[in-house]
Length: 342
Image 1 (cartoon, rainbow, N blue to C red):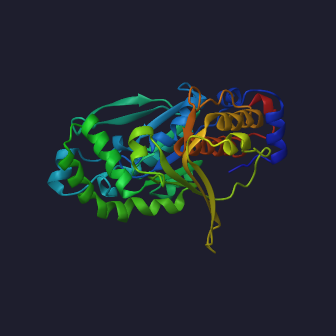
Image 2: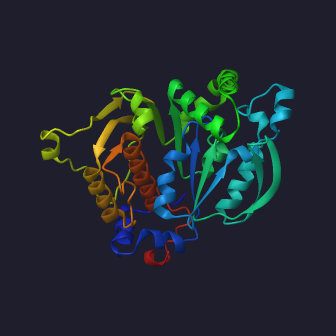
Image 3: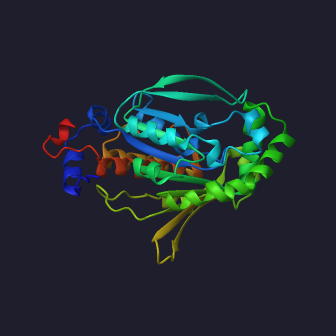
């Protein structure tokens, strides 16, 4: 794996080009892996990358398409989709390697509404490929092929609420069916899915807000923790500018920012905790600062909002980390080529 030096990265950013155009002309396929239980909100935390870079650069694969058995056959065998033997892990590995090489694959298709398979379809990778699913970080080969990784872990109460809402609306389940499935899946989640958190660059934990669980239903307000490794490199510092006047003149919404150092001799990690709602003008300044630092434009995840939630803040920080990883980690970087011609 080749790494760009900080000087090279600064020169690349300093040439004034929008970094999206550099990515567009690069031969490199950048891969993002997101693991977590079904209904855990995985898509929420990669949506910012789709919004920032656009559908022409970002493509997504859902690993549910790589189930080995349909729903009926799983019931007959008495296994859940969380069990690795119920999935085509070897085919996922093969396809991800081919996608990183820029090749088109014939991707299987799983129809959740029917619980059966449809005909495979051709899938051509964008310059950024997002892999989302139960077993994204399960095997050493998959982890080797991924450039940035996330593990999404909502509290049990939050996960149940989300899964009930999604499966009743999109998959035709009733409430009791969803609750029964959650109960049946729990042992396999603890055995096969939860351990993957140890391989993620960032663990995202979601719980109900300390300011009241009702805010989840009315304004999508949660407490979000980002547990992450220290960043090795940055193009330059990004300031989180806080408007003291707005705070001292009594903001109308509650907000909390906390940092917790994890004392683990095996792995140094820190936890940033957000809760509540922050005035969007503060976050817009942060978006502008990221635009100026990375030359990725536009970054406007908070456009049209008066207040942003902890989820919004987490999405923005994750997007910033992913952009930095893409700047500094260039697997197919050729030192003989001009940086501005990548």
